[in-house]
Amino acid sequence: MTDACTDRLGALLNHFPVRARMFHSGAMCGITDFSAPNEGGQMHLVRTGAVEVIHPGRPSLQVNAPSLLLYPRPMSRRFMTDTQHGSDLVCADLQFDGGISNPVAGALPDVICLALDDVDGVDQVLTLLFDEAFGNNCGRHVLIDRLFEVVLIQVLRHLMETGKISGGMLAGLSHPKLRHALVAMHDQPRQAWSLDTLAGISGMSRTVFANSFRSVVGCTPGVYLQGWRIRLAQRALRQGRPLKMIAIEVGYGSEAALSRAFKAHCSMTPREWRNGTLPDSASVR
Image 1 (cartoon, rainbow, N blue to C red):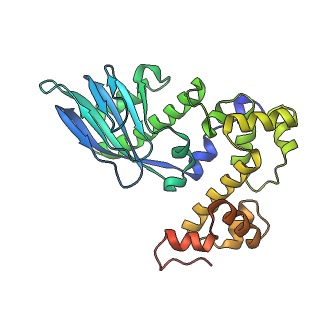
Image 2: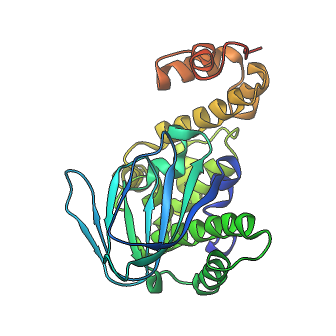
Image 3: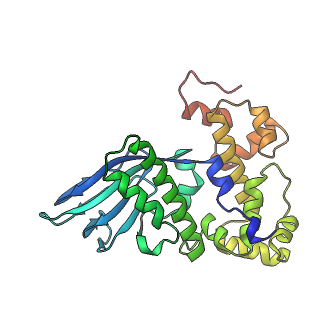
């Protein structure tokens, strides 16, 4: 397996997509408070002007150049801008499929601040996004929503390529060798992956692979694989899929085996999890 054929984001975003919805485009002057949404995150694109961003209990951020602020999870904040000239921003809500169990959102820090000039390959997307956001073309909201999603993918690429995430899944996907094992597990969760096979895919010895994986990702390959399979099972449960079919699709040979793994990971059975997540009218077959 070579880097050219290793799509580190494909399976992640296919199974757990992110949807954006613009909620502001224009000037902000003075003080603007953003209360944390009930779920999901937000992205702010600062086109012009300076912004001081205040987070309760944290050091403030000074944004003095066109920048991106990404909040993968709910978090209150205050933006302070010049009362006369203000700053131009475009902002969107981000809905991560699976909520708190979304692996992409879970792998990101609470807040990310990047200068737009530092994110490779995003120039043309941002030009179109800003033109639409500050224009009045028909269909602009739908187009801007999709462009925000493209920007998020570019940010994830940037974080992986620059190694700015110090631990967890994205750090593993940044690793030149471990990435191959992670992509294999993401792409083929039903495969009976062994430590030897994953080490071979990564071009490492069994011992070096196991130690490197735990050091970089923060858990053993077996624990990671189980967590990935359980996330996929949760997604299928929300879709109303039968347990027997889910068990086969995510790599467990029977409902009983899936239930044991699910309870070990979540401290509850698939039915208990489903009944506590969805309305009473939805049942697990």
